[in-house]
Amino acid sequence: MPFLYKYLPSEYARAFLDKGEVLFRNLTYFIKQEDKVRGDPWEGTHRNVSQNDCAINLGDRKRIVGEFSVLNSINNADLVYIFCLSELNSENLMNEFKSDACIEIFDPDEFIRRIRFAVMRKPWNDRKIGLIDKSVHYYRADSSECSFDITDPKQLAFAKERSYAWQKEFRLVFSVGKALKKPKERIMRIITPHYDPRDEAIKGSTNKKIVKIKCLHDIARLVRHS
Image: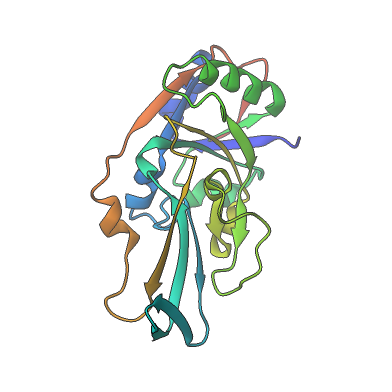
């Protein structure tokens, strides 16, 4: 596995390296973020936007015709937690994330193994899923072609639109309870009233969990510091 990089404020770099404090935030946190670099209103969702009018059958010989967006999303973004990394060592990324420190994880397999071990011991963790680690899936909302199963919540936790591909993101994901068991499927009109996922996210709660895996100096180092 290639090296992984974490961009963060230098004030938290020592807690990460010296104590192994790994901060996970839930998907709701990122949905609510107004910062377009760190926040994404479509976190945990795959959307396919129709380019032409299409007909939706409603039953009883009723149907509606128009432009629609088909959404497959995680049922409860409050209960799905992610830790974001990048596969790129980039000064540009450091600037975009408004970070003054970058940590290189030069033994990512061992890093993930330690986090998985710690997460699996937590009583709230869905042990059938445990910790999932993989590169983010980047897709085009205006294309029906997709490289992953859009009906699988475990895959949706790694879904981001193509406009974020420059971040080359790698994620660690776990859930509280059965949050990654079934997806939520919806068909929304593109025309007014326009659907904004943040309206729904406002009802949710942002949260964080710190997973402690002890000192990381044997597998990670500070490589950039402004």
